[in-house]
Image 1 (spheres, one colour):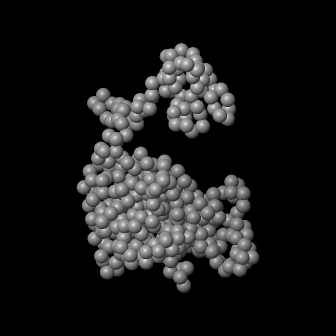
Image 2 (cartoon, one colour):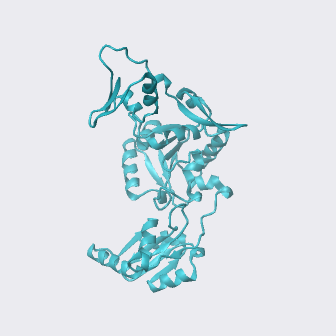
Image 3 (tube, helix red, strand yellow):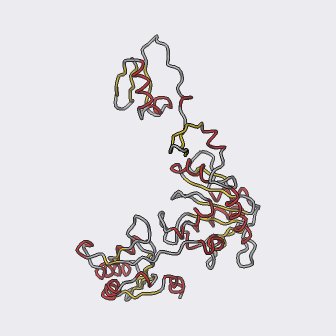
Amino acid sequence: MIVLQSKTFGVLRPVRSAAMQATALFSSPLYSFCFHARGFRLYRPFGTVPPPPLRSWRRRFSVSSSSSGDRVVARPPSELRKKPIGGSSGVGDEKLRALRELFTRPDVGIDAYIIPSQDAHQSEFIAECFERRAFITGFTGSAGTAVVTKEKAALWTDGRYFLQAEQQLNHSWVLMRSGNHGVPTTSEWLNDVLAPGCKIGIDPFLFSSTAAKELKEEIAKKDHQVVFLYDINLVDEIWGESRPKPPSNPTRVHDVEYAGVDALSKLSFLRSELMESGCTAITISMLDEVAWLLNMRGSDVPHSPVFYAYLLVELSSAKLFIDNSKITKEVKDHLSKSGVDLRPYGAILPEIER
């Protein structure tokens, strides 16, 4: 009789017949624990013959299409790694060539470019027009960072997406499995593959101040510099007219019956916090925070009731930077009662620089 036993929870269940043993082992979610020493141990009666090794039975599975419909086909990991991934590599290579050509433009002048997943509001889930990393790499997972030099291209992503990235990246890209032993960070990799004194470009709107500062400090170890490209996003340049249009869905008022507190009171409380902190203004870029503070909702991001906008709150005024096409009369009246003025979405940088 074989008994599965947890170190913590004691005996889980006995299995009596040979057929039942095999069925239970392969169907149980504890199978991988039994054979990989992750907290569970396999026990058998003393003096009996050990079961044959089962590790070779394990396979990854992929779905392939046939005339009779989809079918599940077992393939070993080695075959999955070797097959061409992400479709034709020519399209991806063409994008990389176009991107690298921009490196030498007089208004760019860089040796490498970093492309994060986030939009300008540090969102993980974003509108299609801001999926720049997905466009340049072909990898559509929600998390990842792409780095392109004049000769190399690499993508970092976490364990949720290793298999997906293997399938979607073409052979121009190196997959960096973040969190695995020996895998360098983006900064470490740049320091390793670039000659000292290179320039690394970023779109500063896509990085938090903390992330930009950390990048600057890390690459300075090899005398590299960060170049902030305020006026151009290189991926947008090569995306061109095929890039999806920014969402222009109308916003709506989130009634105080559901919000609990009206927007004017929320702004008043925020101003009190500003004064206590010795500040005169705050710029809010997180989409959920803007929506909550103003009691507004939108549909610019799939499955999220948010809209693309910035909010600048000062001690005596507030300005919402948003595409005017998203503002209905009801929303305009709501903002007016809350003491919020409207400004174009793209006017945020000149406003906070003045």
